[in-house]
Image (cartoon, rainbow, N blue to C red; front, top):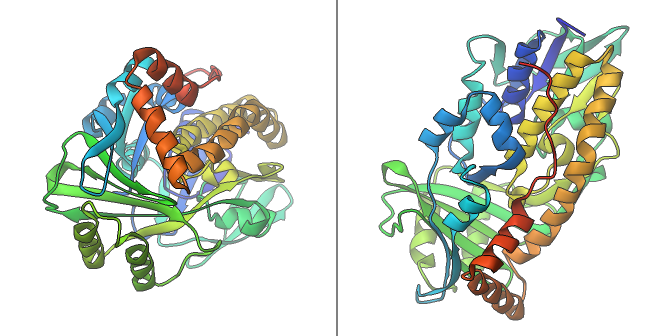
Length: 394
């Protein structure tokens, strides 16, 4: 397998991480990304556990700590903006012995990409159109550039993976919608800034949140019960849908929705998981959300993607052939990741309870977390990673 030419579709988190480890193992990776440039910004993610350990082995922690935010409190407020529940995030850091970072998803992606950007070929504004086995190679066609030949192709292109669709079949065969939609945008100079706090207003079946970013920016996240499996395509329709759901919820929602109307960019997608019977077929494999998306609300998707990149590269370097490597990669990770997906399904319901009783119960649990023993037990059950990273050498 040494010196194999490996195409990686997707320059988010999983793809550049895989390229990093493949380079260190003696392979020749190439990245192709549909977007015209590296995606920046995005919603805030929490980064801990096995993903944190992989980032440490990559030498990324100093940079990630520079980019990160120290969120001290998670707070829920009522219609008038009064705090009704929440918890001190420092207790979570103590459970994790300080090995925890909150940062923008795009900042993490760029930090990883910067480790390989000047050492591999990267093609932006293009995407895979077909992958066909020809003997010991794959013939790959693209939307724009000329066909190329590779030894392996890896789909690291997210929830709506094109490689997965080409090699395994339509998304509907593997997607499990959790019943919610999520939307996020960033605004400049929003006047309400609770520095180092994640503030949310919850109503049955929906939740709006905000948090302060550097440079006078603020980020906003909406999670709400979906009307179906497919969200509107048009940005204006998406904005109108969000406004209709949240306009009567008090707090700062009128101001937030006014900023939403002005926004030039809006992330909007289903809250879904990907469940697959296998993560490879022939010379094509999948990693990250393309293979096992736990959902946006799971909180650990980036870390699991980093772990998958590390393990797949290590198994490819160790194995006699790609089939053995793909099988070993899946055998190591599946029993770790599937329980994470099961937990994420339950967490989605707790994140945005659909009844008044559910909101009351959530607030009771959060108030109980003021007691240190309760906080330690609850947080440990949510964030513990029962997985030991293999040692593949430096």
